[in-house]
Length: 205
Length: 54
Image (cartoon, rainbow over all chains, first blue to last red; front, top):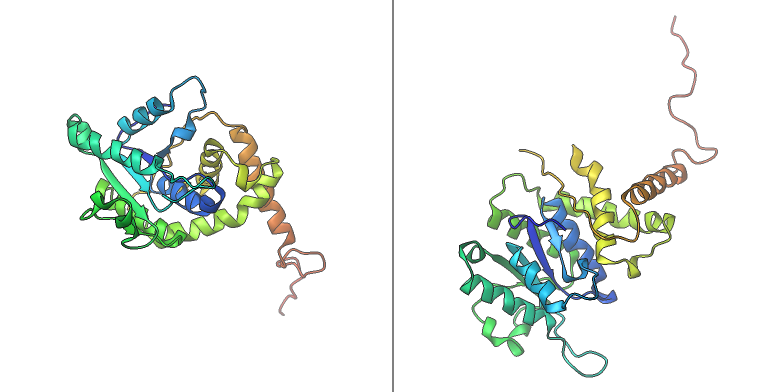
């Protein structure tokens, strides 16, 4: 997968059924704003070390979207630390990395205000956004963040992205049925391909 | 304001780009077919005969 540092947005978020709508909204918005989403799930070579994959992706992404809203106990009573851990790598690379790495920019999502301070108090004073599991809030937050941090004047308004996203969600079930796929088992790479193909005519004019 | 350019990336997927674009085209075609304006029995626009005015 070719990398373009200034276009890549590292996606650090849960990949489970409960989060699927949020995942769709954020990947869709990243593409719609002219950027490229990257994730550890993009790489499917089982021989590669997972941490190495994550380090490479972070190194090659100027932007990072981190969602720590799901740092909760799993079915076995253990918390999921992957997302705060990857956020920590991102912050460390920005602090101690090369000049390019110091230009990194992150958006940190939490579910509701202040809850993260109970489990990640080091983030106190860092600007985070609460999305309340609302896809419109996610879309606007990501769009506003990418627009202000990249200063790209061509970034569309959030209302047009929300409109396009609603059309995508309406068409998605029938389109997937035509190729014998379903929403809840879609791989990250397939999701990216599906969004790219939906957006081709939308962004052509 | 300039249009945003879609940046596509070749990834290891379980379906091809052509299959996905065809799936959307088919879904949109079915949606149009089932919409009230073109459903069976519904009057079609632009197919009526127009009386000539004298």
